[in-house]
Image (cartoon, rainbow, N blue to C red; front, side, top):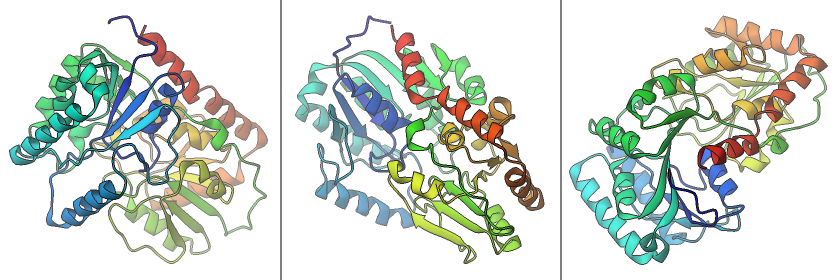
Length: 377
């Protein structure tokens, strides 16, 4: 790998928008922006378009009209980072891909920094549009940060597997957060390493909460609400079995569901303000479904949950069981979930809380970034 230019530009190609739920994409871009110029290019969309999606595409177009490249619509952007917002269609068929290729050509022409070339491309998208942009921008190094198994997402185009294989073979370094994802991607990659998610610990350390009255617990989940990974039926069952419990689901609703009245949906919230919901919670929950997609998932919020000190109850995803079996409680089925939540709160202790917080501090995003920098040298 060529020696890095510490002052060189970093192009982050993201499959989510900057103002979507805060994840690894925005964190990595922000960490690079502490010492180097960063262009954060939004290229969402790999799932086949349905009729119901046209309103979403129209909303995206309107957003870009109001907040084009270089603007954030009021969302905080760190110094040294600039947003690049081309309008692209989901890269799911030849016509859409041709339109996106035209847009990538226009983008590079109007961005002098991209024409001149960048030191590093940090890419989060396996789409044909991302590959097109990578091919057009001269670069010293290419890193594919494969946070999820995109091939297990419902509704992806058949050619995505071949496109990702091309990306894995071209990337100087491929990052994956979980053991399962490493096993799936390593055989195809030039060089693949495991880099788990970290935590912005200072955002989630909150005071101890006084014990709630028996039968009146508050449960918290935050993240986008989508049936692809979240077990809506389980959440509904828990809420109905314990009507005195308060269940807070913070995040944008990507697939609607009608929940009981003790389930609250406050919508997407700024990442730095999630602590005010954590302060209300007795226990954090990660009620995922188990499928080919989630089997490779390490939730982005894993170490954030530990940083809160609160008990955490989760579906037994392979990575969570392997890495955090001593700090999480696990359950399968509605009855077991209710029992696990009740037990986790009742048996919690100062030593357990201290252990969770210490584990989070040892897995901060600063530590993760330092490790990446070592791999890049």
